Image (cartoon, rainbow, N blue to C red; front, side, top):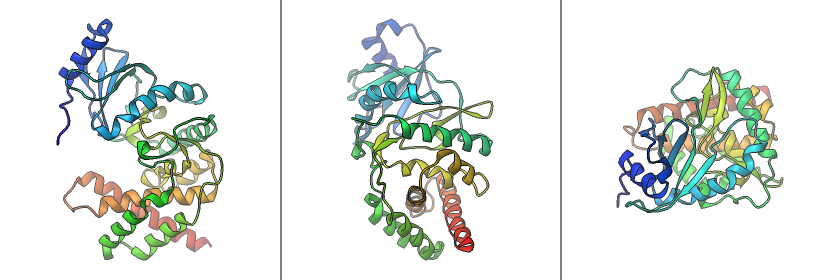
Length: 298
């Protein structure tokens, strides 16, 4: 069953009905508008964010409650909720109004990887220091981001089997086994849950804001480190690691998170989303090259 049509006309009706003080502000779609949520600009200084399916709806109230609490301790801006909307006008879920954050998404733009490695590593280190008491424990609301990597064990092994000889399956399984052999033993910490270029805003080549905390949770920070292999390279990965910190086991699990996502994307039908498949192939190559390098230096 398809969900509601989420377009500027729906947003206009929702805003006019629930927040009439903003009825004079124009509504314009943000391109790209996102997958889990659709985002629209409301006037010059606000944005509207609506979940695209029922599975993402619980994230709205979570972000509304927690983002204002963690923001003051972070070195970069994050989304600032202004108002919480409810179901109406044929839309069945809660939705939110936030302050508009300026900047260009890192995806699709040339990156100064060294600068972003420093900035993002420092941001994640600061996020892990924020008081996590009472925060939302990793689970279905975060799609297990922040939870045990083993939640995706069967899916990962099935994907690697399906890939057969198209990759070095033995090496990939070795990376996966190394990741599963570790566990987070510290107190739960805040996790963003979806650290990817599309959720990083840049200004003048530097990281200016981090957005989309829909998968945020408290738990194991390893999932936030997958970007070390999805985006950074052999030269900038150590720089990111130095800025972020964390122990070797956490980095092994971060590598495992990157492997899981790359494997399931590559195991899909070959014609599906060429750009995503290309990124997954690059990630897998980075992971396996990294393994060879580590074995060679052992």
